[in-house]
Image (cartoon, rainbow, N blue to C red; front, top):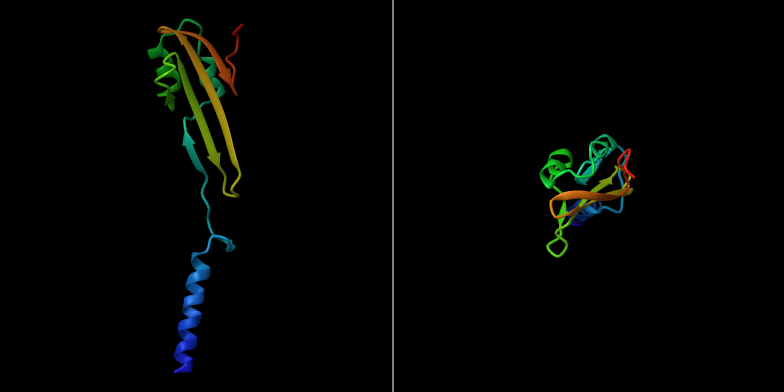
Length: 114
């Protein structure tokens, strides 16, 4: 009986250690996790003052955040977690006056804007 108890205890200990994320086993593949909108400088450079909401949506895609209380602002957020666990986040915001693009802010700036 003691040998079967020993085998059961070792199997239980291995199961607990295998499920614990505190231990990082060598050779385990970890993926890069990307969430949100993918925005590039080339996409931002296509923006021009006076563009309509539809044109901006065509260039940048659907915004991640469309605030109900601030309908003249669209927020694009891109968050990346690399395999080492480091997180980087970039933001880009466009502002409208009615249906017309008037300003931008964030980690990218369109070329040629005042």
